[in-house]
Image (tube, rainbow, N blue to C red; front, top):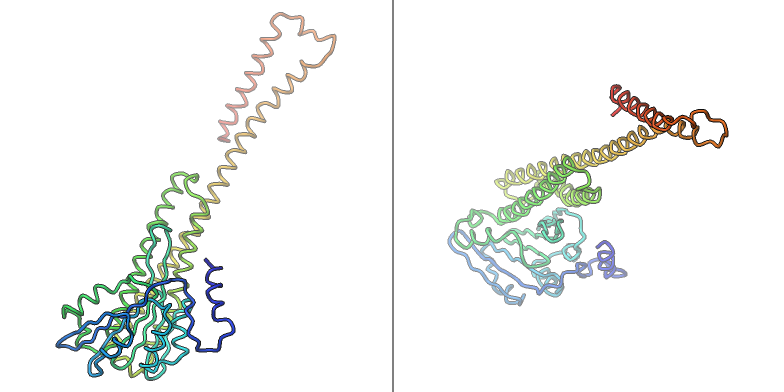
Amino acid sequence: MAAEKIRNYRKKAGLPPGSLVYTGSVESESKLDLFSFDSESIERMQSDDVEQIINGISPARNYWINITGLNNTSIISKLGAHHNIHPLLLEDILNTESVPKIENTGDMLFICMKMLTWDQKSAGIDAEQISFIIGEKHLLSFQEREGDVFNPVRERLLNGLSKAREKSIDFLAYILIDKIIDNYFLVLEKIEDRIEQAEMELLRDTDRITPLEMMRLKKQLILLRKYVYPLRDEIRKLQHDDSKLIDRKTIKYINDLYDHLQNIVQNIEGFRDTITGLMELYSASLSNRMNSVMKTLTMIGAIFIPLTFIAGIYGMNFDYMPELTYPWAYPAVMLLMLALALGMFFYMKSRKWF
């Protein structure tokens, strides 16, 4: 996976800054979805022709264009030219390894983050980069492939049930980002379920879980931390950013985003501590098991030491061993060895050595 990312990133090697090169690996047909709306009405246009979408824009109304599929860089370039987006921002949109960040250029706000889902097949996090450009009356969203968490937002917009129809365009951006962050909680719940399952199996039987499973869970938390921490810090900066593109009424909703991210961060740290505790418990269980085995072997060895001594004496080739001539000598020696073994066994048990 890491090697594939490096190979994709090499596509940009030697190119000047601002070169539009898609560094991802998702080959998806580019599609555009335009929502043009006000408080009274809404129009939707779907097309793969960027010129048709641009011609369908009504400057007097708020509009949202969702672009799916980033491998067709000409579409990104034409949309960027129409909205006067700086080439470096377009480059960040196409660079799928960009760190979550928020940039205020004055006349537009750029937001780059990850849309996370839980992949049941691989039992891990599936991350997709999504970028937003917020202007005075427009919102552009760029995602790598079809399938997202925005369908409820689209339905509410079309049905006239969304407050975004009546508010400034930054409120719609907040709603979309909030949907993405809500999905972070769903991913976190999946990780929590797997941690609880690992804990139950570990307490039941250490053979039913391996350190590899716990390391896999820890890796998922590290990945989630990598995406959430920078975004939380950027949202914190946005809270105090005196941008003309953020309505004062929207600030309280941005504060809510920060609270959600802070909650996720605290859960990540708590789960990491839990996994660390499970790994320590696993190591302690292995150590206790080894100690138990060694104790058993030591007791067996201690019991057989005197028995071996007695057997060794009667195994020597001496001509004169008076006991050998007695008919009851053999059973007497056997009884002596049995009594000695039982005596040592009950002595060890009385001392609670096992």
